[in-house]
Length: 358
Image: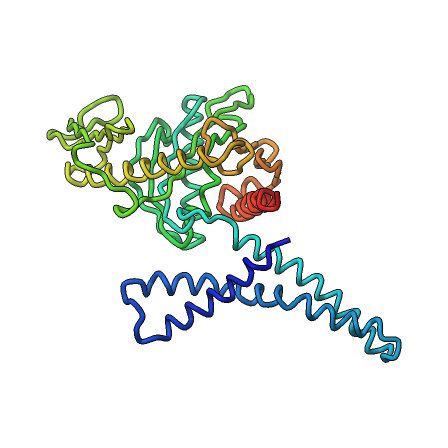
């Protein structure tokens, strides 16, 4: 049950903002902020008004049902309408609860995705490359813009590490559940006896922080420059273009050497550093708020195995919600990615709703 006062606040706040937006005296500095809040309230306004009118409408229909003088056909229509009203009340209540849930400000941000080969040697690096290709295909299907930030290749087309930014609408909310250990079970190309091997790759998804989100003082940075090196350690540049940036207060270190220009490497490095600091601070806040963090979907705990890709059986299993899809090939092509993400989002919302009702 939602406190009726909270629902009334939604309607009254919407009316107040509507008056402000139509006024000639509106503060131009706050116009964008007010418009955004008004737009958000618009999405839930009909649900709020229907929820508030439920009791009065219900009384009217029950009066018809208990009136023996009413025509039977009228009573049947009233019964049908009352059943529909109760159903709508449950729907409106759920929508209002979801709206009133504490919002993660990062959900609407772009994201930085980091994929690293884990245990399993060469096969792990090949799997890391497959995961990156999968996210590339998802990005194309959803018209997201994926931009490579840095890449470290291994033999046979594998990836030791790859970092990319992904831009679009509500990117972080769509990808945040990908953080964790992804395990693969398959027969490697180098396996001569057909044995199934298990290897892993880690995925970290960070909300892309803007300069307004994280202020970095120059005095808190130590910047070292060195020569870029390629596979096997050979020098690929005759100048000190590679950059290593250390954020002294947090101890976070970022190295960047993909560009030939030291300035470009520093820009890319600071972009990654800013997002890692932002996530570091967010995690500190979440840890302080959440007593039972293990029960929280999408915590981003990378020590936890979140998903298994079993190629011999053609299945992908998400262990957090015990969901198995026998559509591995389609999943790796980015075709059924939303099916798992929507299930994870729904589960997370349901857990939040349970906490709200306690």
